[in-house]
Image (cartoon, rainbow over all chains, first blue to last red):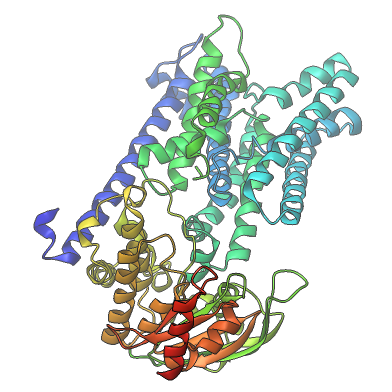
Length: 347
Length: 279
């Protein structure tokens, strides 16, 4: 470094490039890891498919048994897991950065609980099925976000207050979901179970297509708003000084994060802690600024890895993926609370 | 880069809730000069600066940049003319100094104009000007308070704006670092002709470094002009509600406020006041 002190622009360039290289390498490594985990999920398990067979199946060859398992079960599961994980990851990183608090992820502050409660309400009380459930989930998530927005505004926009109110909302909504579950008959209840834990077990191509469409629309918006998010990381005033239209960008990012969390919840149920874990893990890998691509990839990786464990941990039974992510996420939450002095920096 | 842009306020009323904090305030910031805003706690000086920086929408009146209402201009366009150092900016953990200062370039970047050689030069110049070049690869969270403040000023400098607003840039710094930061702003003003507007707590440092001072009391301007016209026993008495005597700063020749607390209000203080009155 010191040899460059007499050539300042070259020094700046070298530091800037080193940083960029690290981001590029991390994102590339994460991409490879996600693809590898995707293949492992599809190919391995109680029914193992070889790579050549997999390629032949994709090419349209019918292999008795294998074709059905890959095309109707494993592949849609992995696709839904990948997309939902990415959506949860980006949503969490946006929320945590926006509210400058690692606790402020949509699954902790009740957005995903709102989505689940609305979905369960629809299934149990209104008898809604299929795509209607997804819309209800989205509406539920938005409603919680709106409630938090209004309540936090009343108290002078304190982020800590918003997190506490959110945790309260989450508990209340989970109680609502449990209550609705006890009121339903046994067949509906098993259908609703997904909204308690989060699971890829019911993944279909139809669900994967909906999720692909939603994330395909929302992720480019995230890329567009990421620039503003980098400004907001420095505080609202500094961001405004840099020419970021703060109020508009904040609202846009909040809606985006809620929408991503809600569409992912609509597809898989509230997969515990994925949104909460992804931002901080991505940040730790990169050291420094928020990176939405990295957070999305970490989210996808966490869900796919958890799915591998969930599918193979107990022989003969497929656990909901949320059970595994919950077991991973809870210790991390405790660790964050214990090392509380560092809280307040955002994921 | 030589003070082409003008900033001012006309009948400006600012507030956060029902009660206005700044009321019907008009002010012209002299081009290419150092202006400081002084006043007691809660007199509205930070609110006024936030208003000038378009962070607050006026309840009435206007902030004028080059004669046009600042809220009618695209905020990115304003950011290329006017930089801001807010009171308590936050840097995320692990952000390097180059990364942070580089963000000052964002008003000049866009979808099609990403990081360029011009940005590198601007960041390097800003680091050099603030004496932080040797910190370039460090992360902001591991810097000392004085270094951090310099780095934040470097970010505002990298923005390459004609006007620079600073909200209490010397708070939390010891006296040596306060003088450092103010020297830096004076250099910037002299070399580049940057118009500097700062809210300062320390009257004596404000008097020494300002070309123009604005004293506020309860959201209104009570005095504005060169330090000698503003820093008087009468004005300081009004604004801070404190008896004092004003002498010449033995180093800079600018007015120097000597407070008269109750503790010293004995014969020595009376003599000092009398001497001050004679002088």
